[in-house]
Image (cartoon, rainbow, N blue to C red; front, side):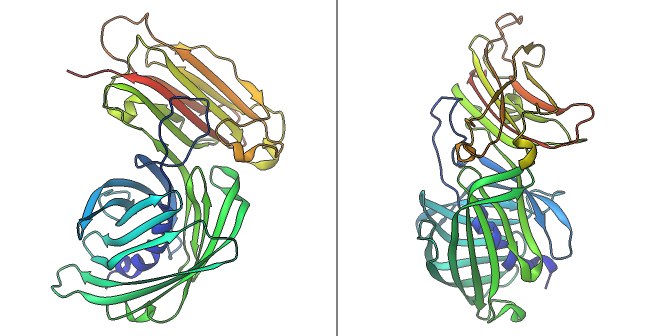
Length: 377
């Protein structure tokens, strides 16, 4: 059996939890909380493999699958950077803010696991109360004709409603902490995994989804490094895009760009774009100082830029769960159009944050951009 096949059972335990997210709409206001992830959110993850290797993963919705007449979103966990089509597809239907229904998953080119019916996991149980989900289904190896039976017993408990944890893009507050075990049985399960519980832990943030996960027995884990959401960048009308990530010494610039989302210069230069960036030191102690973040931020159109002033605030617009903890947040804002640029073509709008010379402490950047999309011929 392939290395990836053996570890699919463990990877999926984290990956399923990594997409337990809730949807939010576009309210048109750039000066509002970051909000919960949507179907168009793309997650950038550091995945830790049993051999100690750390790889960049992506998690995103790539389509739908229909099983017994019911549609499920296919969340692709891309675990092979050289070929993003490889990885694991998880079939999920988000019932509402606190309930997620799971039907199966597929490791591309290796196996397909399908539940015998939909199974629902809820996230709103009281702290300390054990929840149990019994999942029965079949396992079909690639190239085989006969599915084999398998069962997973999942027991989990919410340990806390409000923890503060360290992540690659800084200290986060208001995090929910879950722990649990998965016990596998049946002919379709690798023999060495049958019958004994595998422990897992997950830390869930209301704006970012799962920010940390761990399966200690297999030295398997994940840390969220950032995420972005392009909304609907090809449909004429107003669109909102947003992104959160890290700016560190020697790192590439952080950028939220309308052209990166659409693949086109299709932003309307005659209509004002609203652009907001929030900066905060990733380190908790530095974030409690009045030191300006050592970065260079710009609002640009690809040809020119819009002037602005960076302003300090004790209050976070994007991350209100961090308010009252003594942090200083820094804001840049522009409400501008590029009417002076020649031609009747579209342009791009961009928010860019890059490390300044001599930068020593990492900075978290959160940005949102609302603009009008032009119809393309």
